[in-house]
Image 1 (spheres, protein in one colour):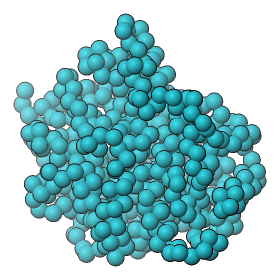
Image 2 (cartoon, rainbow, N blue to C red; image 1 turned 180 degrees about the vertical axis):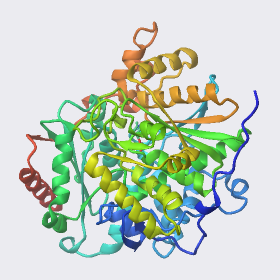
Image 3 (cartoon, rainbow, N blue to C red; image 1 turned 135 degrees about the vertical axis):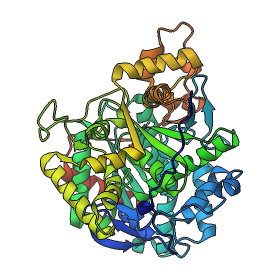
Length: 529
Ligand SMILES: *Cc1c(COP(=O)(O)O)cnc(C)c1O
């Protein structure tokens, strides 16, 4: 079989000259020249756009030779140093934040690679405190919040200190990773809302068994969207927000994307050391496009992956975009694009989205390359803002064929159905004696399809969660195998006893904004005592 030739990933117009310092701007224009600290603490720009760096820095020459024996944390330091000006965070402080963030991971390689017999490589991202890839970002974000706040506050007395109140809704993974990232952090409180009876028992226990004073679990009678709705209302309450500095930890925060770049680079370096890096592709189970967007930055910085592979479940807005060039909420071949719909419930719930919030950042780069006559940021932001407003109005926006063609140079995509997900978990167990979670299974099924159509390439499939977190799907797939036993084969020792641990949560009842704000104020007062 002939090996495909490797093409250099960047076209010249995409390459932005390295200047001395990165600043941040909003994808929708309006605001520019934000510091890294602004971008991280604000989360979302005031014009509704997302923060992006003013340029994409390039790796230094000889980076592979120089970095290939570095640890995960050392690689993280090299990458983040390119995006975080030293004036904002001195080198020693940044090193310390990074080291503390990744010392909580259980594996000596932090994110190790496992080689499967079927030819695929699996990048295991689940060795952090909550057994999900979101730990990579949220361990870092928690320490970063604490660093900025304690620096601002110095040794001011309690009543004069700036305090950040993080409020978020979760259907599982984000909540537990956020709680573990923020527990016990100075000058930060965290309130996580989740729907009663709709989060897996293990995920619920992971959240409610954290007893730190600054952690508040709020159980709502309703569904995830009810939780999300009242959280949005809290963010929209200008006065309340001003008084309590409401912060977000969702996947649009730039620091989350930044920290995730590390494992793409580190995985590439591991592959070089294993002597098989001449042609790599990353396969990424994708929902909000935060994970794979970090891969895009890694590629633009110089990781020689010719393609990034999007793996979606039945919530396939991205797969449809890469097939048709139309970004639309609802599949218009099935129902009107602007009809109301909610995400399908699948076996991979962390990817159950209608719209991929981070895709806006990639669309901005597409606008810059293809639609901005002078390649200026302002032109790109104007076009992006138009696309987003059309999307908001009609539930759909289409790009020109040339734009889609450019996008296809970076990405390919596959959709994996619910049945195929379960079959994939079964198949991997049978052939590899390896138990994977349903999100990872979506990725591996995608990887196998790619291996078949384009062999001779090293496919690195990202494993985004430990299988014990999704016991329903895993047991559904595997319980018919004789000798299979969840408790002894899948459940990590760290989870033993979790269901009986002491726990703390607030039964909130029906969603209601006034009562939520009241609750937050009372809890914040209590914390100060
Ligand atoms: C969040 C999550 C994903 C999706 O990541 P995005 O950044 O939203 O694309 C995939 N798998 C698991 C287990 C997750 O928790």
